[in-house]
Figure (cartoon, rainbow, N blue to C red):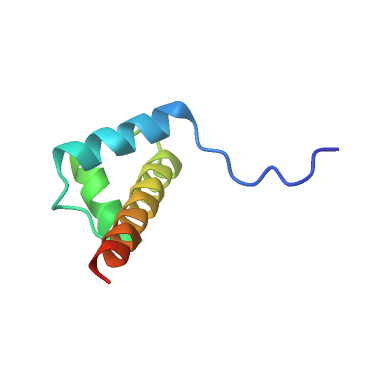
Length: 74
């Protein structure tokens, strides 16, 4: 029995999300619903689940970036 695995994102999800965030840094926000729409316009995914995983990881990365910026300002 495995305990404490949590959610696992594949390399493909992470790579795609990082590439999109690098190419379009101003398009994505910390709003998952907005990011989901943008990802569906930019990437042809095989399923909603993959699209949602990419959008969720982008949202996660944007939140990390915003927290870092807030720390450096204050």
